[in-house]
Image 1 (spheres, rainbow, N blue to C red):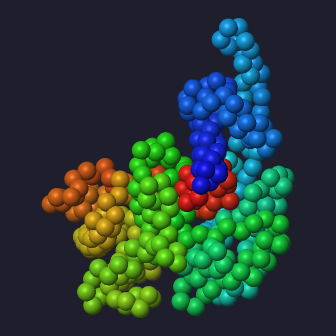
Image 2: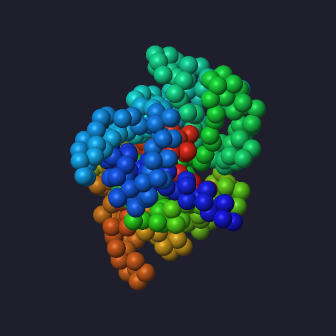
Image 3: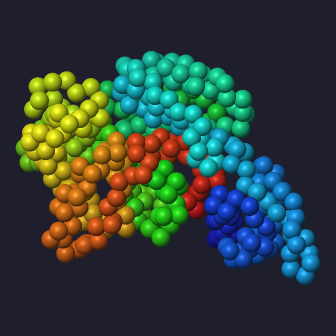
Length: 388
């Protein structure tokens, strides 16, 4: 038991030190020791490991106490890189980031794939093109792949929709092609990871966070006491399949009246198409004046917001989260939703009156994709990891 505790404490100190380096950038041993309350010998060992792995480098010396020279170090955000891939049925998004989470390259490939063979071919082909001019491939830590479906990370198996499943062998083909490990995750969980890491300074006092991902479907990533909660079989957070409307529209999950059937991006687009008798090709098109400023458009959004509020309020009552973050393209148009959403959720709510609990993601539609890219960097960003 003592050995396990020592290992956990070692990892915790390394993670805290890494966080400090990311935020402060330039530092000395004494500054780390004083700020994090870690002994100088422990800090020395950590910095030795970081120097070996090129996470930091020496920048010189300055005068310390009693006239001693203190060695200064600087964080190296380009020591390692990572790839994130977000999968939808009709397109794939890719991103390349450094240790800071800085986006170095990003692309979207709009192409439908109908089976696993087609998917693997598409990913390998597009990723080769994506990395063609990148000259530091040997420093890429891995590839994070996320999608809005059931994910089994232990067996490298993912299920997208009712009839599309990717198995371990499919992932092996991609791993062998690039010589990089594959990390699989549900896209809503990845969104929670992305938010938690990128906005860590603003969320570090929040232990319990609910990230709601609104895309072609709806899912949620749940962080409880700083740890990602997965539930049995990694199936927690399926907020999109909470029945909201009795005897409502049939859902792909087999139930009726699920939140996803009324509040996903696709559902909102279809509602506008039905009411305005025209084709809506992109989510952004909804917010054109010819739609959004009309009485019909306003009524569609009002009903949408009411139903979404019911789903979020249900989740809030169950989880009592410190913070609820709504992610996806909806966050770019929050002014159309936020006032009414907060009014419905928090008015006449004896359990929670703090409207600041709810906010829209500052990462727009990128939280899931960035989360995907951060997963291979988990040895550095262990904040969300269950093993710490």
